[in-house]
Length: 244
Image (cartoon, helix red, strand yellow):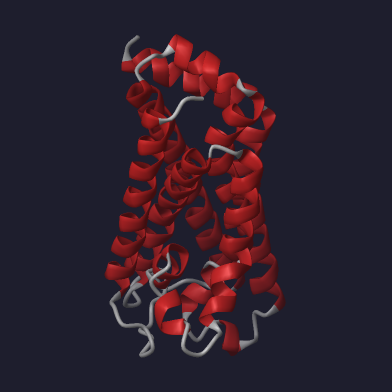
């Protein structure tokens, strides 16, 4: 079976299973909708716009949970339903099957990142106006786009390691939504929590430096990319070495 055939089959799975195509769409709607609502409500509140990226990506704090669910479902749904056996029968080369899922997942994640970032930019411009020439703005927008496929890859890889949809949902969704935020608020743990993938990746959104963060904005995105590579590698090891 060729790479093109595998990609086509993975795309068919994505577009015919409602939960898989609806979750990235939901991520876009939640992110842009909340960003627009908050910026319209607090248009006169300068505390929201001291760092413009806070208002720009406000809704993404909530929408990223749906995007994480998308990454989990790409792999976890096959383990949950048992169809992974049929997939491996059709595509005996496990690396080819896994690679197809990674390409489709990261591609949809990239598209979601473009829609979320572009939509949020339009929303904030509608409410407050945006200065695209301000220092760090282009880097912040670029990081917002790239964060999304990296998050999908992390969730897909970890789900492949866990080989269980429920376990992946139970671990990853609360971690993305609350876990690292709570850890970042605990003295003594904060210094370690800043190296977790979502904390590091979201620091790349920020236009202003934080003296409590030990690394630069671009380094934060590289840290998240390293986590994504580790998760993808771990998922491949699990899929290639264990029976389904």
